[in-house]
Image (cartoon, rainbow, N blue to C red; front, side):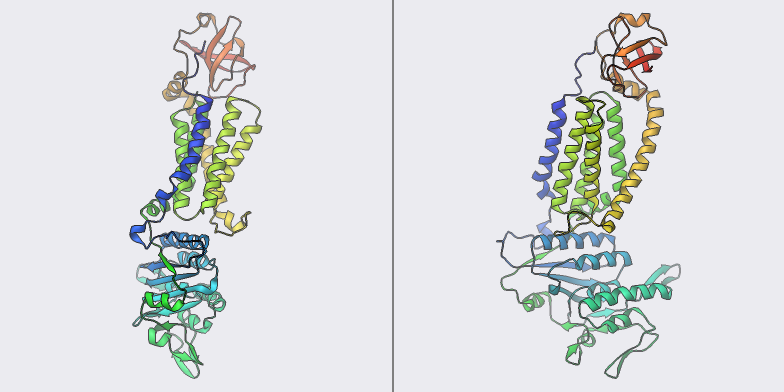
Length: 480
């Protein structure tokens, strides 16, 4: 007879799921913003005034989008009164610029968004400044030269006119929304546009507009061209005029560098979790493969949270749904095998939790995500599912023939001598499964239970089976 399975106790999986949920709440502060590199998130009363400052430094790349998104989400959650972009950048990637602009537009109140150009804001930096309501520049700074280019073998090369037109339209939309002079930003993008204001030619056709602080702050019809001169960030904070405001400066954390990589490999993390889970279900008990699958999932969830993709509410909900999904799958396998109801419900909850973790949501967004929000999560999940199904098919055909599979199966087998009736069994003999074969268990061939295994199939208790091979004490069966 089989001895009690020392690798699985139903309470262990329930306890592990509970630990996952508790871990997500107890250890969340360990991944929070690092006060050593910023002013830090203050402990203030609910009604205290807050100003969030986001440094936009160096080249604008994908990595910067995660910092900006996290900052905007934190500011919204804290009900911040103002948001300042402290900018010194030579420009950068167009897609990263677009994501940053879209994120800044989420801030509320949008009338309290500021850009402080401190030395330079070229190309993508000039575009981003148009997404804020107010633009300030420190003395001696420069803004402009926003013509989109692509790096070629011979250096930067201008994009075709249709791409330039698309970028110009994007910056015009931002400028119009925030009350800036659209024609000024248009002249920074498109060299085919000349700029003449009150009879003064600021840039001729064939050139790209670039402005110094003095030029950008010059008054036309009583209004600065696009910016106001100010001495420093402290002076801007004072000018905003929010009394006793606490200033929170957002900086990248150590964990975000790892988290950004985790977000990039999200489909492969999910694939690893699915494959490890599959191997766990194909082996007896609950052990290293199941734990590894859950750890992959936890890395996936924490990576998206730390990178600023998932807000705290969605992160907590995702962990809870994932743990409930695991519990329902465990109920399906060990309590009500073959019912499908619990297993399908558990798989559904796990898929929902994975999708929710990848949705780039903001505080105050509707509960039901929009299709644009779901586009990337569905793509990642689809890639993961295809890779997982291919891998599972290969494992189903190859794994049962490997020594590793035999070791996994036999690790859950009895340590007692197998029933003597095995010596009288022959290939083709039929019997009835006494237990659920997952894939090992016992079968009654008419002379007491015999330990058997399948080629990887799960066979419910009470099912008729037949012997396909006998190798020593190893009896392999399949459904009759």
